[in-house]
Image 1 (spheres, rainbow, N blue to C red):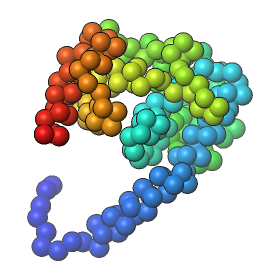
Image 2 (tube, rainbow, N blue to C red; image 1 turned 180 degrees about the vertical axis):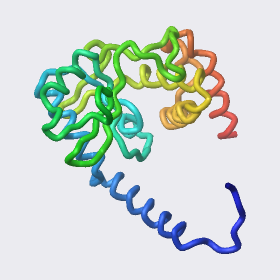
Image 3 (tube, rainbow, N blue to C red; image 1 turned 45 degrees about the horizontal axis):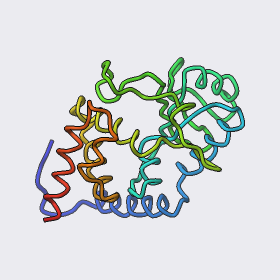
Length: 209
């Protein structure tokens, strides 16, 4: 229940300090989630499983500084099964029996798995779906990510169709601002999300006036 308080409670102050410390560790690359990310990417690469890191961790790669407590990864279903076969009980556990979600038991960090062919946002069929990482991911020496254009398309489709995913639209707004994206960039996006992208470009422009 919402209520007003005349004095800040000690536990609130402690959460403030703890949050600041955790954010500092995250941006210094010392958080448990960073260790979990590197362990996961290394194991997927060793097994030859196509993947792409998505979610907040991938936003950091595109100059948008976001903290997170878990790792989001895009896999094909056969890739997930191959990973489970190799590593369940060897540093990884299912979040519940039969779940696609995992937990890095060593780092105590959740691994949220998104499967190729699933639909962002409300989960219902739409023109934009999560792609096959074997075809869509861009790989570096240590990690594989989705291109910024694909990431923006997925976030737009998510925020457009799920009221509880409005943060995805805010993420796109921030990416527009950071990368100086304009209305001309809409041509590189799927038609399904272009109008929303243009709306956010206009919002970003208005905020800077």
